[in-house]
Length: 140
Image (cartoon, rainbow, N blue to C red; front, side, top):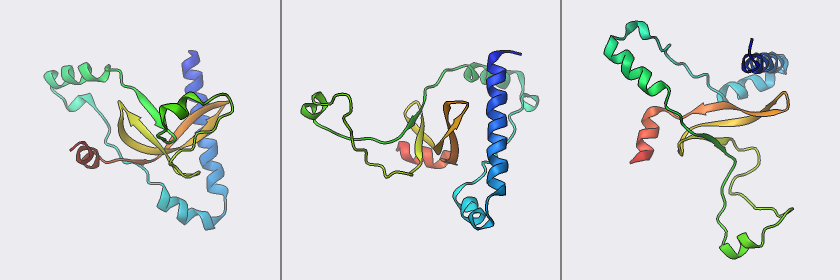
């Protein structure tokens, strides 16, 4: 088993452990959590229902690399203030503490999420995925 497989198993185990601990927390938080977090229902991507041409097209795009980034917040400052930044400086962001992070793919907002830590590494748990219709609407 490769190191990458071990890391994935660690993530899966940690996420399952966290889900189990959240289930054990008080019932008073359950309704609020259910309203705040929706489970994304996705159709299974299956090549069985595709003809050869569609399979070839799908194979062509599945290996295209994309850049995924998580954004805590933004701020605009003047170049004068930028040049005065040094170690220990604090830059105020427009976001309030506790707000979800933006998850961007190639600069396009696709989801919101929260930071999780698993085995001393940061990760993002998606809490809200932007619908395709909404993403298209934002492009216009």
